[in-house]
Image 1: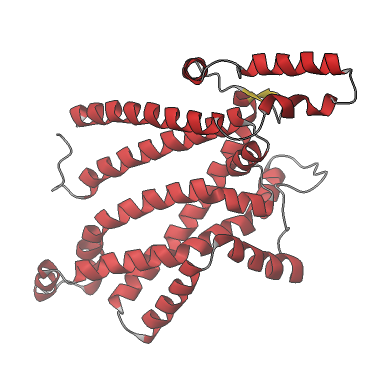
Image 2 (image 1 turned 90 degrees about the vertical axis):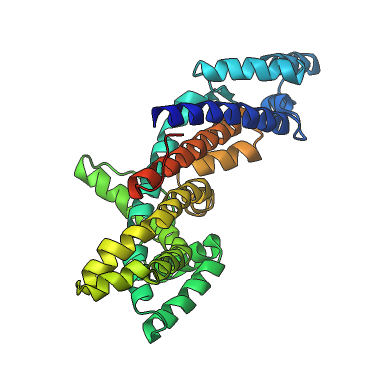
Length: 328
């Protein structure tokens, strides 16, 4: 296994550098003048000569007059030393401002993943066991509808009903304005504000995940070893959960990890709708304000998370199914 992990790590490093080169070139060839955006507010407040001096100083600081290969080497060298650059929008080092949004996004995604798996796995198994029943047909119709509706539509609909009409949840934000509590009160207030975003992300994922679990279980229940287990007189629960589900789990593991990644990267929509201080909203603001140090740092973070998740997926195969060898 160690040999396999070593090979994968070398592969991951290569992919990381290739992606970094592509993203750096794309971001640095985007239309617009980052230096001008940084000093634009000074126009009219200082003389034209002072404005040009400030503008040139901003270009020098950003290294915009250097060739792209030189800029990439400087940027990558700083990145490998933990220097993610300077945010022209937030007016602070990226490393100092990215921590809190990243923590918020991770918390939201963990809650959404746990809730979604707690619903979709039992529901998918039950639909597979009761295949083509009225309940299964109804669930399949609902999952198709849910799978087809974009997450922002789901978010707006739930905001209208649960926030505007019923007043059960706040429309946006991370905590109550002028909140003075501490300890448990802070946690409860934060959970109250995150409840509806988590519900939106969960509802948006129910359709695809439920259908995937159902399909994996139906395939497992068709196997000969299931008929053999039933012929031996084993209880139906044992057949379903100890035999069918265990073999269907290999396919579901891929779904779980890939879905978590898609939620993590797709949270930009939910964070924008609810104005959450998350990594997705920071990425959006970085792009809209040409704050490329922030956008590049988050993009490379997504790249690292994707590479690690793929490695974890491959390693989990060996844990779930002993027939899968991962020592080569």
